[in-house]
Length: 140
Image (cartoon, rainbow, N blue to C red; front, side, top):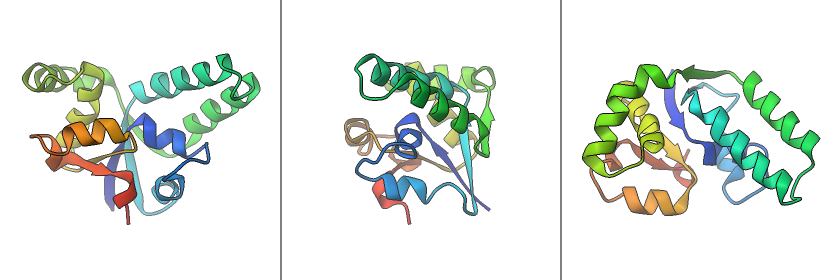
């Protein structure tokens, strides 16, 4: 079975019709095991809160999305299990600790981290982390 780590930018594309949403949707419901640090729920919740606050979605929609995300067959790994490796990555690469949690999981599982965050991808795709990074548009 193929395994991938996804970040919150990919998970949000499962719920909002945006560029690269079709590619992101290919990742769920198939033969790919999706791995995530448990921090993803807080990150998605934060984006949903902002969208509710800005009037982009209704509060009920935010709750529906978050509840649906919790029911998806994601393999969530606790941040505590990834903490030492994430801190090492963050201090050695000038990445944030939260970003480093996703990389720590990808490295631990010897797989790639799929992102839909163009700025972040551009920043990291030419450095030492590129081995573990994949653009959502390149998902086949």
